[in-house]
Each structure stands twice: as structure tokens, then as C-alpha cells.
Image (cartoon, rainbow, N blue to C red):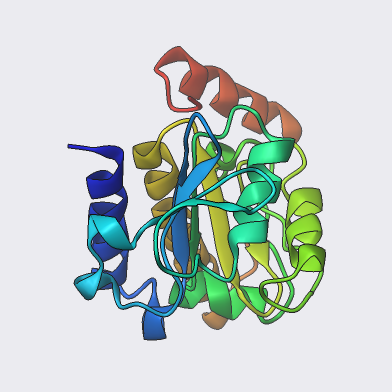
Length: 211
């Protein structure tokens, strides 16, 4: 499967899960010249390889006839700041988005939080979608992390591979659903402490879960 085909397949799969309502959300993969990103305002069910847009790091179009996603600055900023990032997934998945609208992140209430690279998943400061301000707010929230919530907006995750970024984006939504269910039940989460989290990181690194 080509990179372009894999990008479309991942976008359609996340859309089918309800993570991309109303043509929202976007995905990209790093290329030798910059990155390949999904187009703006096109339903994923209708997207074909020719609709994808390749941009250079500054956002100049290298290939493609459509407008790139309005969030191309977000993707460009992540690739610039995080050389290990090979793919970026941005979703409007319902539970993560709901939590972002409270401008709250996810604390270490479950050991799977470690997949995000640290002891929590932060929520960024608010900025208008599609702006450089949002991109920089996201970079700050991603410091030492591979996933973040975007205030009043959604979630973002990156990985060395597209499969890794997609898996992490899905796990962020799963954690947000669990956390909100816990709070809706009126229960206070018991948070994992630093020693417990260090043990989780050691276990995960032993079988590649942090790659």
C-alpha cells in the first residue's frame, strides 16, 4: 500500500468511528520534501490519492490540485519541532473534544496514559483553528508528549508511523471516554504516582509500546 493510500484508509477508518464529524479532522505523513496532508472540505469517503496535497515545511504546495487542510500549520509545526514524528493525526473525536471544551487534560488515572509519552495528556491554550497561534499552543502542550487536547477543539497525536499515530489518537479518545464516565458517576479518580508511572514506562519500553 502506498503512503497516500494508507493515509486515505486511516482517514476513512477514523471517520467511520465518528472521529471526523462534518469533514473535520486531518491527517498527514512526513515525506522527503515536507509532508502529505488531507485536503480541506472534502468528505473522506470521496477522497482519492490525487486529492492529497504535498507541502514543503513552509506550507508551499509541492504537489496536488486541492487546498490543503486548514490545519496544515499545526502539522508543519509538529514536524519542525519533533523530528521523530513521521505522521500526525488530528481528530474531533467526541469524548476528547468534550473534555477539551472544559480546557482540561487527562491526569494519570490509567496506566495507558503513558502511551502519550508522559504522566498526563495536556490541554493546550485556546487559539482560533487554522492559525499559527494554535500551532504554537499545540507545540507547547506536546512538550515531552506525543498527544494533546486542543482547547475547545479536539485532539492531536503523532507517531513514528501512521499506524502509531492512529493507534494513539484512538487511545486518547478511549481514555477521555473512561475519564468522563468516571466523573459523570461522581467518582474521584485515584491517580498513579511517579513510581507507578516509572514502572509502566519500563514495562512498555520492554515490548515496544512507547515506539
